[in-house]
Image (spheres, rainbow, N blue to C red):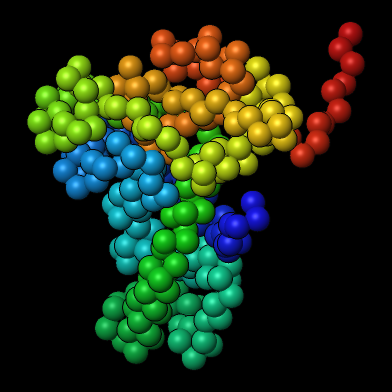
Length: 281
């Protein structure tokens, strides 16, 4: 990835965000996702039609983050010191040092209770606001870090885009009326004439150069100048879309077998090393 700038990732906060995103998707009812779909449909429809670096998955993570803030939970809590350790560590990920002069006396507050009026409690309120402001400064990085974590979960990506496909199918008449240049008369999204190089490289890097389904290495093809097949996890014929989070790499054989009939993917990955397997009697 010669031309990619290295970025600082904040895994502590991003993993928490990913957990919230998965819980919201699978546990909460469809009404929440329908609200998110209306945002995509009305404000970011281009992300369905063309691959953008800021993906629909980024938008979903922003939406989850804006609707579930631990900082807001802290403001409604007893303000114990332990509750701040997580976000203090997040700031350390970005080399942000907390000035000692703004740190409140947690021991005093815990002993006397939080009144919100005395000097110590007002200092604590200012401390919470300071942390919240700093976290907001790094929110784009946290979102992008969470995106990288969630992009590894292909079963989630499949389920996410299958639900998007239901929304696309439901609103296909409206989408076709407003965006006929990108929508077929059948209501399916048109295939992109070509995929950007950055997307191909990113998917090859994410999938570690092997076919997602059969696990055969594809680096030899790349060396010969043959691009791996870029496959829509949820096919366009099944109301899939062209967002980068709906792509995976396949070998030509698996892609021809999958074609436009299936949303097949895999949770297999290449570990750093294999754990020893005990002999079973």
